[in-house]
Every structure is written in structure tokens, then in C-alpha cells.
Image 1 (cartoon, one colour):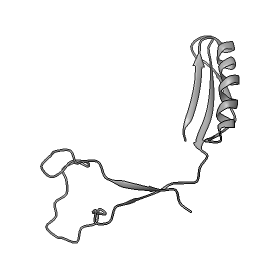
Image 2: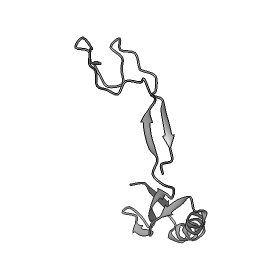
Image 3: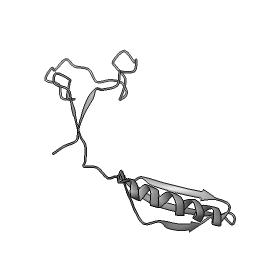
Length: 104
């Protein structure tokens, strides 16, 4: 869950910013913006407004390019890396290439 938090020591300032920002985010059509929740600061007079935010578009599917390893090895001589993300020589592996598909 992705959350957006608007926080300040002045509760009126937090409400003022939220009243400007949240309608703009909802009207953009790019984000699904949940209901806001007001939480008092534990240490002081401040206020937090917390809102759940998710992309409004369809889910995106990600898959590996053809010919890239899928993690399963048919070779019995393959070695596992000492730590995830490192090659057997201990050097960091390059980032994986992935193609994004907006789906149906």
C-alpha cells in the first residue's frame, strides 16, 4: 500500500494544503486517491493527514525478454551466487531488462 502523508506542526496549515492538493490529485485521473485520515502527532500539536494512493490505469504486466534466464537451470554444473544479486565472482550483476505491457 502506498501512502501519502501531509504533516506539519500547524494543523491548520496541514488542512489548508490537503484541501488544495487532494482535489487536484483526484481530478487528474492518474491516481486513485483514498479517503483521508487525520492523525494527531504524538509529540506536539501537529497533525498528519494520511491518504492511500494507487495508479488509476490498468495493471501492468512485466516479463523477461526471450532468451534471458528465468531462474531455473537445466545444467547440473551451475553454481549459485554467494548472495542474491551478485555473480559467482562477487561483482554486482547488471539490472535485468524487462518489457512493460499495459495489458488487455
